[in-house]
Length: 419
Ligand code: AMP
Ligand code: GLY
Image (cartoon, rainbow, N blue to C red; front, side):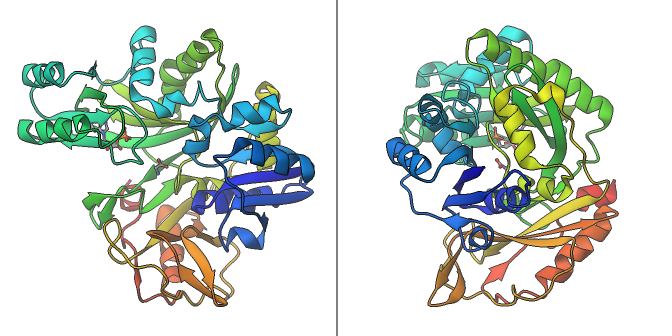
């Protein structure tokens, strides 16, 4: 089977690496990809916003399956258009992708089906939003309704901070001015990944990431500076509780609306003293969580994805390595603020151990040299018998990479090691 993968990040390199090992695969294409993905797939330049062009490419190359990595093409309805053209695609429809694309959509489902989440109000009117703030006080959380690349959320510890966040949203910075204001939840955060074929769900694995740029979880938020799997705090009992009280009712709700959720569901949870509560859903794999998930996966990812699209998840199971996986993100100095592109990266051609993979994120080739081409650039990912061993292996590899203009956190996995 010929497969087209869409995306260019570390998540897509990890997916490409796993898909390329599938016995079902004939040929793997990726658009736009990156130099790391180019080692396992044929890179093609397609305008992914032009659905007709993607369909035409699939038809000429006899591509029978498309895997969508990032959220934007899902929210734009690429999967719906591919399906209409008779091409199977992994990822939810435009309607179902609202679970990630609209915080208000998800909150309304939670309210209707009694799914544990933070208490909230949904506002299109600044006056009413202010009134809600004054009534509830700080700490409180302000979220822009739509996709904001992780930058639309403010956890406000004081009322003035909360008011400033509202002013920003109602200035139109994140598109249409609409917001969710919600109760501040306290507890450890963890991510739970599942496949849903619309009717059946298959739990995959748990992970935790490090959103802040600095050691000790300090400094501004980023797209993620590292991750590990499994998340020690997500016991089997908590996974079962999250499945029963959060994920299953959500999957049923969407099926009931006539838009079954087909794809990977990434539930962001906070483990409060009253049990797991939903913070958000993502309608795609996490980045960098996928890098650690793919290292631990023992079964064929393409078989799992096809069963998801074919509605046969009840007929298969999934096996994971007992090992712990950890990934360290190497970023360009200055990230998540201004940083330079084009600096050379050396040392990736050496032999790393078998249980170590360096996934590319923002890299490019320039005059035959590998250079940095984004904020988050490499994901140095290792397996170990314990969290400490995986961490030690990942940093040993980081130290062999010669990229003076890059940096990384030095404490990825601290919570798991402590546990
Ligand atoms: P989100 O984009 O919804 O995942 O939010 C980004 C981050 O904000 C989360 O990972 C949490 O750390 C934090 N956050 C979001 N909602 C809440 C909440 N209700 N209470 C406390 N922290 C939150
Ligand atoms: N690592 C966070 C995300 O993928 O949204």
